[in-house]
Every structure is written in C-alpha cells, then in structure tokens.
Amino acid sequence: MSLESTTQPLVRIDGLQKYFWENDSILDRLFGNDPVPVRAVDGVSLDIHQGETLGLVGESGCGKSTMGETLLRLQEPTDGRVEFDGQNVYELSGDELTAFRHDAQVVFQDPFSSLDPRMTIGETVRQPLDVHDIGSETERDERVADLLERVGLSADQLDRYPHEFSGGQRQRIGIARALALEPEFMVLDEPTSALDVSVQAQVLNLLDDLQDEFDLTYLLISHDLSVVRHVCDRVAVMYLGEIVEVRPVDELFTEPKHPYTKALLESVPRASTDERKRDRETLTGDVPSPRDPPSGCRFRTRCPMVIPPEDMDIEQETYRELMHLRERVENRDLSLASVGDEGQFETDNGGVPDADVPAFVAALKARLLETELPPRHDAIVEEALAELADENWEAAAERLRTAYESVCERDNPSLGDGAHSVACHLHGVASERPSEPDSWT
Ligand code: SF4
Image 1 (tube, rainbow, N blue to C red):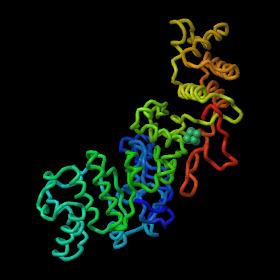
Image 2 (cartoon, rainbow, N blue to C red):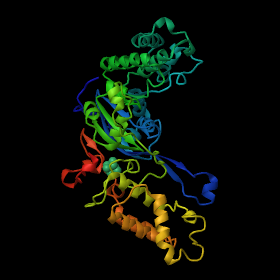
Image 3 (cartoon, rainbow, N blue to C red):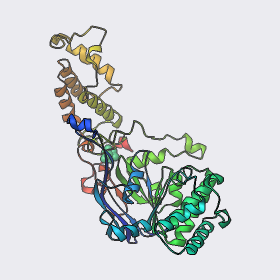
C-alpha cells in the first residue's frame, strides 16, 4: 500500500468532538449536578487522502474507535465537521445519506461477535444488498458468490454458518460483507487483533490486494505498531482524544518527534538481544481521565521532556519531582498530621509553633522529595512548605506555581498543517521553540 499523500482528501475531518455525558440522570438534574463530559474525541482535524491507508494509533481508550465510528456517523458528533467527497456527512439525509452508507463501510475487530450466528454466510454477505435493494435476486446471488471468491473463500460455502469457520475466515466474511456495497472508504477497526499471527498476515495481504483492486481508501485503527508500519502510508498518533503527530509512516518510525510517539515506539518489543538490552524510555504513569484532562498539553503528566520556565537550569528529573510536589500541594494530597515522629508537630492550635517550623519543613521535605535540590530550588521549596506549617495550602501552591509553571501546562500545543505535523511546544514555529537543555539529549 504505497501512495503519495499529495492526492485529494477523500475525507476531511475538522474540529471533530465526541463527548459522552455523565451525571445526566433524572436524579442528577433534580439535585442540580452539572453533567461531566467524557471527552473521547476532542477537536480532531485530519485529512484522509484518496487511495491511501492512514493508520490511527494510540493506547487503549484514547478515542480511536470512537473517532472511526463518529466519522462514519455511526455516532452523532458533539461538534465539528466531516466532509466525505466534499459533502458534510452530518447534514446528509435521504438518498444522499444512503449513498454515504454505501460508500463508507467498517470492518470490526472481533470476527467472532460481528457475525450473526443464525445467518448463513451467504445471507450475511447478501444482507446489505437486500437492505439497500440492489440488483435482482440472481444478481445478488452472483455478487455474493463473487465476493466470497475475492476474499479467498468458496462459493460452495454459502450455506454454512459462522461457527463452521476459523477466525481468519470469519474476518474474510466480514470484509466481503463490507465490500458488498462497493465502498470507496473503509474504517478497519483492529481488523487482525483477534487473529493468530500467521492468519493476520493473510488478512493484511488480502486487504492490500483489495485496496488495489477496488481503489479503496482505508483508515486503519490499530494498537499494533508493527501492523501499522507494514501497511500504512501515513500515521496519526492519538492521545487522550487529540491527535499529537501525523507523519508519513517511514519518517514516523525512523524519526518520531512527539515525546508520546517516541515512548510508544519504545514500547514495541525488540527482536535482537542488543536492542532488548539498551536503555528504553518507556511510558510511566497512568493515562489521565478523559473527564478531567490536564490543562495545556494533555501528555504533560507523563512526558519525560516537559519544558521548564524560561532561563531555569534544572535537570528534567528534578523538575518532574517538583511538578509532582506542586500537584500534591494543589490537590491537598498530603497528611500534615503525620509529619515527623508521632505528635512531634502540633498543628491543632493555629499551626506549628514558629520555633518548630524549620524542623517541620525539613521533615516534610525528606518525606516528599527523593532528590537533593540545588540551593535556589531548595529555598523555594522550603518557603512553600513553611506555608503548610500554618496549613496555608493556597499560598504554598501559589509559591510553587509562580516558580515552576511550564508552558506545557499553560498552552495546548496545536498540530499545525501539512503532512509533518507535531503538537508539541518543542516542535513549534522555529522562532518560538524553546531550546532543548543538554540533559534532554
Ligand atoms: S508540549 Fe511539553 S509536555 Fe507536551 S509533549 Fe511537548 S514537551 Fe512534552
């Protein structure tokens, strides 16, 4: 599947959002609880070019499948626009909507549950033709037999049921059904993840052949980077509902730019012993909740390259530790009562006595920080922690915020235009890009 991405976009996605709402029951409305949106897809803009295979990758739960379903209008969007062949998909109705349903199809992940066990495979593949009333009875029968042959099955198997087939064969049946209406565009949602490795290759080769034969455009959703590398022309990387990098496949795999893409690629198992032995920067920390994504860059809570304030000379590891400390102070996620030996610091009667504050700060610092701080940062942290001796949480948080707030927290980097787009402040417009400290290289 090799095709230049300079051809016309068949699909144009612009600012697509899909939110799911929680706290929206009758009781919640009665008690006036505000609905909380789960931001599954949050402002995605992307072109998919005629004849290409665009890979969409990211960890589970990042919004890949929801994006595929929303752009096919299997789910209604919260906001945004999707154009297919120049028409706004969400404004289609009647014959135009029917035509779109012909032209844009989906192949699902699970070949075991996506087929009706009560229908023969002939009926399954024929169903879309019946629903859309296409051709005569004889023409439909001929088309179904032809499709089964095209996907490597036999027309003699028409009257058999799904349970009589292997996983790979069932996925072929799903592909034949998707092809029945002669689509231009197919969303392939993890089409091989439920299959054995040997069968995966057969199904991927089949999809490749069919793309050439039927001039198809694919959006391949996958968490399997080796599959993506093998079959895609370009790749879009998704994190917490946003696209963070879009690049031609070879560039993405040889020169990833976004720290998240780098970490994803690092997580791919290595074949050689040497490769396995080398230091790898794998992803740490949990993916934040899409109900409450971090401010600024959504990857900042896990990013190993967060940009410190300008002119601050600080090791990344130390900076991350200070950010974590600040987060705990902001969230009041510390027990002051347990600082020092039991009962050492009485805070019940208006705070720690002045004479005990230095010891209180030292005990708290020892508990919270593993790294020995350079003197300048040590002084800032001590000032902030001294505020906690009076349980003055907001003043402590403000002191740390003023000193350590990052551009990565303030501004959400935009993806930019073109085929080589990266949403990261390290890769912005050259004149605005912060220089990378030596410790990051
Ligand atoms: S914007 Fe900042 S936090 Fe986000 S990926 Fe780039 S360096 Fe990391």
